[in-house]
Image (cartoon, rainbow over all chains, first blue to last red):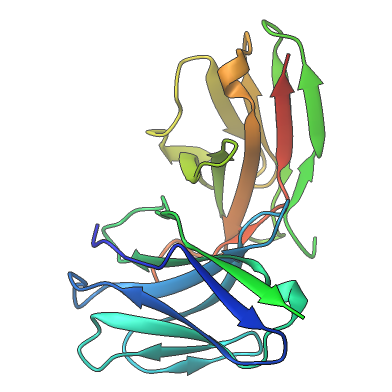
Length: 111
Length: 115
């Protein structure tokens, strides 16, 4: 599987936008970029995914670089409830069913 | 149901006892997955079900671990002769499709403590 690289931790102030980066320089043309997050003491939660174009949903936006070697998860207005570990995961039809969560980025949101 | 339901939410068992963990996926989701998360560690894939069949059991750590799914719905993960290293949060997820263009919905997990 192509590998992703994320910062170990980030910090944001409440009500400010947060940009969570993910590098995936070995991404293949068929890899989808998925983001999950895991709040304390909860199971992972699907956030968003995309292939080439930027994507928006009610939780977040996903900005994908033109060369697809990196992507950014954007939380438009961070709240205290957004404090979680955010995982960037690549998936294609050959990667099977086992999501490779890696270590993710631990996001701290301060009031 | 509206979400993936797991029971019990917490389980404390004595070393050497057998335990059963239950997962109730979202209604209509044909794919079901079990993961394990040990304290401070990442998520470890255990097994995947498509309907009642398990095409991928590659993540089961030993023959003490087994899982089944009946009626294309509820799944049970069984751990025999539990050991202290089995202590972890066991997470279940389901999805309507298995392709890379679909996300998974996870339950809140069962926290297993072996004493």
